Image (cartoon, rainbow, N blue to C red; front, side, top):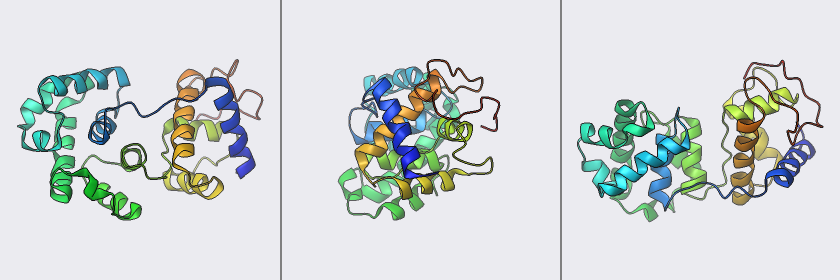
Length: 221
């Protein structure tokens, strides 16, 4: 994979879809909560869960930290897997309160790699969620890799079948400027392309990347 290939993919997607204005959310904390709730569900369901938290006056780090896990599970029920996600939110907020005492600006002086390592120790926070929190909530230029990213790059012969998360992330970060807005927009555009065209059963006609070399039968992702 080369920087020229990545530049071309970005250009084609941006020309087709325009800026995506990601990540939806009112402030840092809401974006963090959304990053956890969006696991294995769509954003419409996440929005319903966040609205429930707001109506309950619980869209606050201290409020979620102090809330009974069963009450929290009922509030986030629309997001699916609500019992599991309630435990994950509690674990995340245990870390967040211990680290910041509710003042998220205390994270600003912590190095990105240190924060990432800490986030990855939290139960239920994987690499994609950790990087989403870093990029979208904490304004750190780290690239977020998801299933859409892997599928698109694999089908266009830009990665091998055994390329894992860290490899793909490193390739992007080594071949693109470490720019917050670029990484934000690039990831959002890959998600848009993946959702509309590069599905498990590919719909190549009309895809912004249709003119690039591709193989719809490469189904490892």
